[in-house]
Amino acid sequence: MPPRTLRIIDANCNRISEGLRLLEDIARFLLNDANLSQQFKTMRHGLVDSLSKFGTDLLSQRNSEADVGASIGSASRRQDLPSIATANAKRAEEGFRVIEELARLPEMSAVLHSKDFQRARFNLYALERDLLSKLLRQDKLAQLRGLYVIIDTQVLAPKDGVEAADEAVHGGAKIIQLRDKRHDKGELLAIAQKLRDLCRKSGALFIMNDHLDIALAVGADGLHIGQTDLPLAVVRKELPVDRIVGCSARTSGQAQRAQAEGADYVAVGSIFPSPTRKDATVIGVERLRQIRQAISVPLVAIGGINRDNIAEVMAAGADSAAVISAVLAEKNIQRATRRLVKAIEQGIDKHR
Image (cartoon, rainbow, N blue to C red; front, side):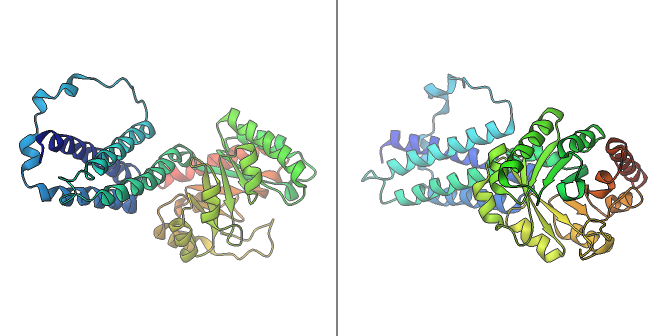
């Protein structure tokens, strides 16, 4: 086999292996994603198996010292993990394409199969999307802590939802969700846009309940769905890769299924009897603990949570506590929010 061709194959195999290893480590150590990590590892090992057919020929042709490309530095300056992940995925994909083309040469076709490298390249395209989508959502998920206020327009009426959200955010709420079953889509769109603008200015997350179209239209940070809403797979396909999806659950099985299907967080309830939903099934704090042990994604507790029991909920493993009437039913929403935030903080300090 021509030595120069072997040098090209060796160089591109090194590029692929190095790129895949970095992506594997991001999936393993930063995202704690065993499935993604294993897929990158399997792809990397498949490359090693393909190269074993060359024996020592590739290594024998390696000549790093005389490589004219070794002195050419990279012009790009990557400042964040998504950029680094993207660059390494492209590096590996390009390497697969080079070997795919060289494998078509008559002297190579007996050793390498072009279709194998084409298949690996397309598999990597899909893995890159999965990895980047999870990386891009990490910042939003890091904000999914503390108090989660649901602006339920049925409970809120006749108060103004935007004003209530503004008070809640100034009181320390980290997440605002809009739940609306009263207005038509045109009115709802206007409300959602105002809430999105408010949250963007204040640094809070804005989550839309149920309405995928409204979430897309206003650029919400995420969407929350229930067990009988659109399937998670459909929601994930339609939302931009950097938006989060939350799913309601009452059992460990539902929570595990939601996590497996791509939910970024799971909302569990009703923890206590709910003043806003009299027919809600109460599951209790012990069930919350069980679900916490069953899943690794952030856990939001909801249902009947107030200043007297919010610390207990957080101690049971919730990352965030969602409230409605504990804030919206109060005359001074900002003060009520601040008291809940303080109760969460005191509860966390107590159980450290």
